[in-house]
Image (cartoon, rainbow, N blue to C red; front, side):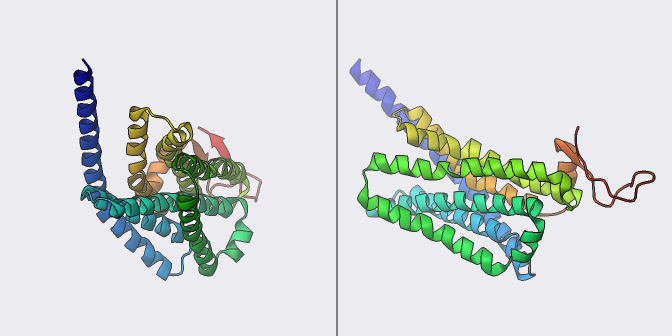
Length: 283
């Protein structure tokens, strides 16, 4: 009976490992070339003097690092090589969360503090913020890896990854509240709200399960493996941010499915009234 249980357990691990490897192959095969194309396209915008895509570019670079770590893992290295790959993967995931917060913060500032954002947004400021987002996880992880127990490390990492959650909710709520008074065109409003909603969804659906498993320090292999699979989908999900940064077909899509209708600054004036009316009305 005990042998049967051990065989079932072994078969389970074999099946999970197979599914995880197949999923990783798909993620790398689809995500890696698309991410390279998206980075190139966004970088061309920066060269034209636009600041907005910088955080998205860095987010995609962190995803690129994750893809490289996935490839190393698929080659099944042993010993210190695998440990280094896992460390770099943890670093890239931490940086990814940081840049998600940066993207959400920038979109919030465009709507809530447009004048301040207009005069403060410079490539120099964005570069400094990006350097901080890259450096902080590196220093923190290097320090923690040598000073704390593994279970304590998991709890600290979970708390670090959990900190952006209230910020993302605040940015979305503050943006929705400020929309009616802002002078941003309606199509741009839809893209801003779409980016904020997408960032919050990616974080909640793909990162939060892994954070919960870290905090619970659960031995439930189903929960751990499911949360790991969801987390590995995040680099693919980040590609949708690139789509939302582009004008064109996404505007028509957002206009048809958006839960709020945002009137443009320059559309119809009320009879006898020379002022433009900006509303956010429920559909």
